[in-house]
Length: 266
Image (cartoon, rainbow, N blue to C red):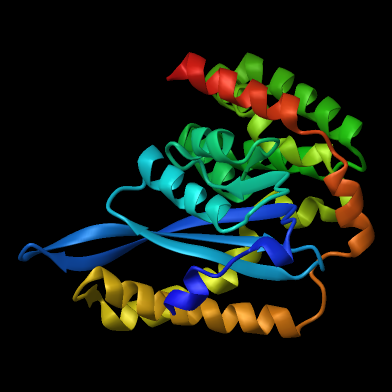
């Protein structure tokens, strides 16, 4: 398992698209039960197949944990990343900027919808959700941005707090529009990883409370290794042509803007 977790990534790169997620698991430490975070990263390699890139167990899902995780991935040869898709994990965007030059962040649309729902009156969520979905249902990038503007305008008069919430997240949830439309569904959310997460949960729920952190790595790592092999033997996740076009996208300016916003709101 250690060999799998620490293998070199150079030969399989560049990894154009990366997805990151965190799962909270319970472990006994110091005579008590505490929650730890299992950080998992997947990526699309140069052949268009998905791979498990790494697994890291950290005490807190904060900037230090994500920074250490991404530094390890880069040290093992992770390169060529154009976008990282994830939930709004604390410190993740800064960690991307510090370790993956030229990569941008795509905030998972599914997780963002849940965040927006929490800021929306319950009686209004039905039509707000419909408006949000209409943004993603557009035929091209220009239409997506135009519809986003219309939705914000429609919400401003009736639900100004919701409109502000959406406007603040504009760059984060629309990062996918910089890439070919053929890959939008694969990168605008972490939904493609849900099957993997369900399998991890199915296995870890049986254990309940882990005796130590190495036991987490052994069990979760085994699930990840099985999925890694299944992906390697399956059909390509993305075509080589679309990967080539995606690699040509310049995301440096977008990432700089994201980090500026992070600094202003910190």
